[in-house]
Amino acid sequence: MTRELSPRLGRAATVLLGLIWAVPFVWMLVAASRPPGLPVGSMASLIPSTAPSLANLAEAWASAEFPLYALNTILICAGILAVQLVTASLAAYAFARLDFPGRTLLFYAFLIQLMLVPVVLLVPNLKTVAALGLYDTLPGVMAPYCATAFGTFLLRQSFREVPRELEEAALIDGARWWEIIRHVYLPLTKPTVIAFSIVSVTAHWNEFVWPLIVINSPDRRPLTLGLATFTLSAEGTQAWGVIAAGTLIVSTPLLVAFLLFQRRFVNSFLASGLK
Image 1 (cartoon, rainbow, N blue to C red):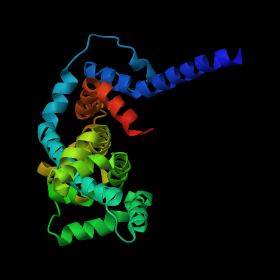
Image 2: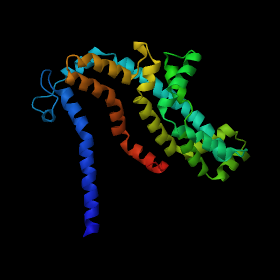
Image 3: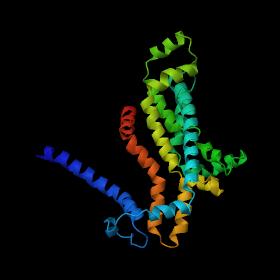
């Protein structure tokens, strides 16, 4: 009897947690679609009482430069990911396949980055970015993330699973080491690459503190800073519907991407061993 109840309790707990997790999103959708002037600050507002309206979305879209913020965010995320894939794959190949003195010790020292609280690195990173003349620029936002211990660790573990015979066959055919990485290791570890790409894009799409410190110009703000500025300007009138509409605009691209590629997202994480 206990064994029969355990799966049911697990499913019930999962459904309950899913419902709790969905409440803020439901509130955001309902608040954004309510006509202006209706209360949206209580739990009762989760129940739609009128026909949906696009007035809040139109007002939010006209009140901030969301297309420009989205373009800046895409440039930041794409630039960071492109550089990270290069540096992480090269470092992972070195730690997985090359033999050199102190390899294991250097790898563990490299992983210390995962133990550092990001806030501790704000001041050193800001000094470095300012010294390089990248302050108040999009490359300045990208610079601290060019190297990634997390991506290096994931790819190293995957590269070690690739049979050495494939690399030896490529060497016999005259392939250079960078061609081996490009045509042998990366295609065979594609699920890990996709999984890391998902984590990287999601993390930097939602990054707030570091861009807040580096960026001053309004035309270089990413979506997170643009949404914060927009929210501060809307809070004076308690325009919760407009604020919810702005939040919906910012979060929609990631939600749509997840819905379109949900199966591939899940399969990538399962294949890469991420929990």
